[in-house]
Length: 93
Image: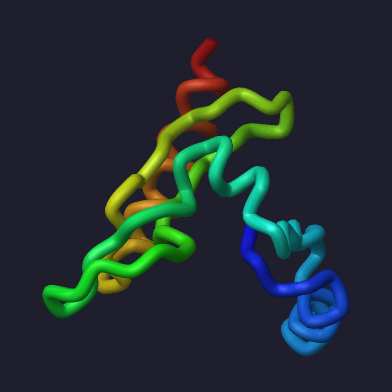
């Protein structure tokens, strides 16, 4: 979810052939409701904006895992590992 408008999301999705929808929240209403918009500090300066967070939600809508303070390095691997772990757990159930 980002504050970018739906048209920019559509262009991005088409450019990268994404097989899923991107969510737009230009007024940050949803982002505020889930705690993903508000004060944040970068290089010692506090500003208000979208916080870099990731939420892994399964097809049934269940929150599997959340990362509330994302660092870019290694994050994609951590998300992929969590997806794999969740898939294996479902196979064993």
